[in-house]
Length: 149
Length: 170
Image 1: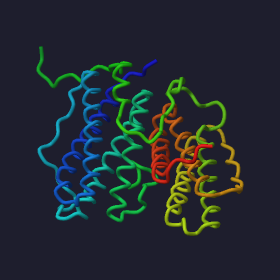
Image 2: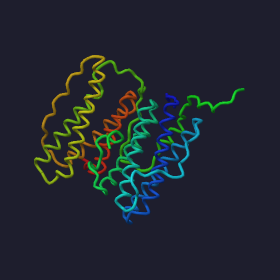
Image 3: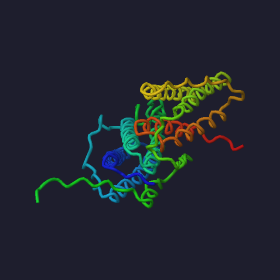
Image 4: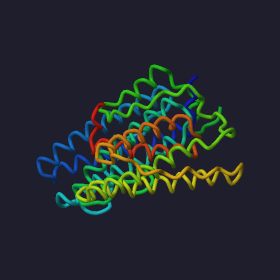
């Protein structure tokens, strides 16, 4: 039996969508500052976030909710001026997305949605670890992704 | 008729078709969470706390890494963060068990981990893969208050499994 996607779960999915929008905007900026090898990683990460974005949008549409739109621009925690600050923006964007997906887990009892959120959390943790390693952020793999930075 | 903001959507059901669509994320860590037959809101008042095996495994993993590092200190940089993570998992899970136990019945302490023979990097690879699988298997069925914690433990172990590589097939 499927558990309904209630308003609480819809709100959590909207927050995850907002985080995915922000991550995609961030990676576009990041691409302009990182060397070719990191740009290749960033493009993979962009593809993953696009997939997640479209999946959330489709799911929200299917349950009768209007997916939130992306902002025209986002404020970065610190100015992005070089490869290191760009990498740190990726760390932040991935951490925000991890927190949002963890929140989805905590706001639904729907098993399929839980499984999808865990998949996003797990794959996002691997993405985050690459940027944490590239920027010397420790631990490379956060012990509690989405909870502790 | 009265003006006002649009009504929030009524609780809608996630159709099987759409659930599959959201579940079809590209890529993979080999972390195939089983679809549990049980209801996510099922009462867990009966029997031992289902998080206890996760605590036991987390402590055992930390001990395993300690044994591996004693045999091969060159792995310290690679594995010491894992030891810290598994210890953090055990602590966080124990706190959650205690939180619930405080309103119900006392939970027996997890059995102390025993030392293992043949502790090497491959045994660690197997351990984190097993840990990821075990925690992922609980994510669908735990109450919402626990889903984030169990999901984070699963995601962390899955990431270590991805970084350390799969254990050799026996």
